[in-house]
Image (tube, rainbow over all chains, first blue to last red; front, side, top):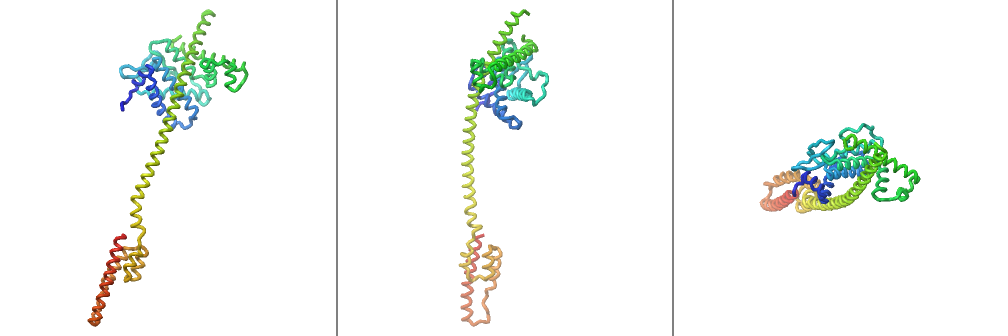
Length: 202
Length: 153
């Protein structure tokens, strides 16, 4: 059996190889499960969300050039600086830990700190539009679950507000939902705008 | 920045957000299918491991039976009666030792008793001849009892 290198995964996923994507998914899932067993206080549902969000970020980073392979080596790019990624699993687990901390902060289980460099999203080396996309994706991932659900139903599933209200089991009024969607969108825009400015992408 | 510029920027940002939301949702749908496949694979692996554990446990069970069953019949089910039936001439002490499974001590006592089987020189020649026959028979039976006990050990 041939040993697949991290750079093989990154190159294949960049080119849309679905089989390699699934292999990478299984490999990182095993790493994640080992971490989850050590952190016994992670609820199963939370763990599943953290894993999926982290994997989407990794996938986005590869697809948009924030994580790329060159001469058999994997590199990541953040705030215009390139650095070596020695181990894809370790890189992924760093995303997982950031996501997990973010989730704990949202649930009030961790104090809110100012975003440090480690919490800043990775960006594409030379493509501003790709970098902006990654920043937006990362900010969407940090939204509260209900906000993401409403925005996904509205933009991805193309549901009307009436349909969303029905899907959510009439949890509140139509106007309440409209206000909530507006607030979710506004807080997302504020965060994205701030990050664009911080990273020089505006 | 004019209101028009701000509106335009806002529209661009909204478009970027919309694109990203769709992109994430599409990727999540793919990951859900991966998760289903991974869970199915885990379940198959668990079934296989359970099946193999069952087979391994059965094999170990058979091996243990194979090792211990014959030994058990030899070691811990001594048919003392069968040995004693062949050695009616043994003393009550020898028979008691055999019944309580003390074969080593019984063998030592048999040796001693056999050594004591001697012809009384004060008897007549006819009586001596008869006694020699009795001693020979008794010695043969003690030998047989000894062999039987050695096989049981």
